[in-house]
Length: 70
Figure 1 (cartoon, rainbow, N blue to C red):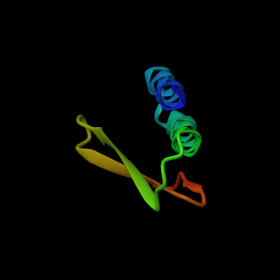
Figure 2: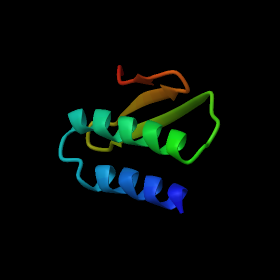
Figure 3: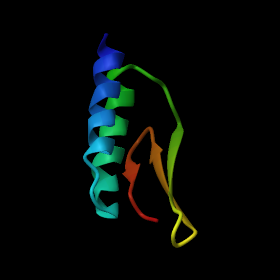
Figure 4: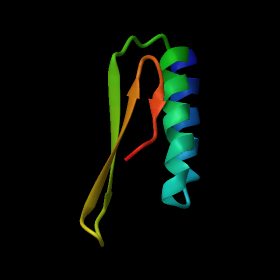
């Protein structure tokens, strides 16, 4: 049940994204969700594609911290 609540928090953050800067909230939410759910991980990445610009941005989460640099 704790994993489901954590996943729901991430889902809400993604749904509420309005601009690219909101990715930081999503990454923090994902990091906290993984920790709360007891998921062991070394690295996790999220890619966002801007189809109009043809650009892919990659963001990384490590077990130690969230990196929001592109």
